[in-house]
Image 1 (cartoon, helix red, strand yellow):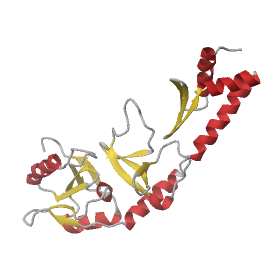
Image 2 (cartoon, rainbow, N blue to C red):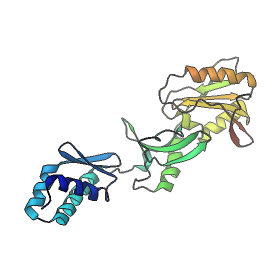
Image 3 (cartoon, rainbow, N blue to C red):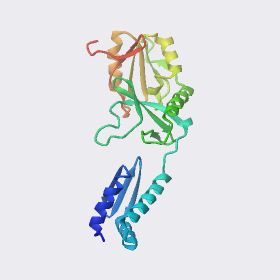
Image 4 (cartoon, rainbow, N blue to C red):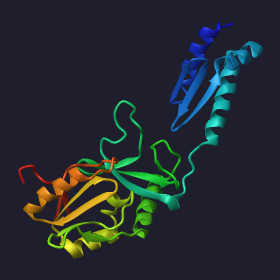
Length: 245
């Protein structure tokens, strides 16, 4: 028979072969998978092991139990409520790198995908059991069903923002209807900035507008930051404006 200390070390080692993260925390075995977690007292698992006197049976039993619990909370996607979401290319990366499903949109900006769950957004992960091609297709279709209106910031300037504040304002940039509005109001050579999720700035290309847009980026108070860069769209290409203009 293994001692409880040896048993704890061994079962954590074996659980980590099945689940992304397994560890002992205090008196509990903690197993994490995606955004869900399970906590089971070490004493309960060890007591089972003492009764059956078979480590492999005990391990299989608790792998099945943990899977059952995690699957209760398994993410089920509603393709009618998925949307593209523009975020900084560094968003979710670092020490606790979260495996968001993402694609590059611009030089320093990625497209992620979210499920609108009413009170909150749930980001789509690479590990989710979803049809990723369908996610992308339906996300853009769903965004194109929404609408917002470009309005002038000032009557004397060809600089525009969106009339209504929403969490999708940055994403609207790539919607079909917004591209039509932009072309109609400022033409096919324009500046834009998306400092945060709720802010889209678009301007006819003029050098004097760059400083104004920079000041607007600094003034944006939305904490959901995306990029402090100013882009130019010209001949079908999106490029960051050179610092020297």
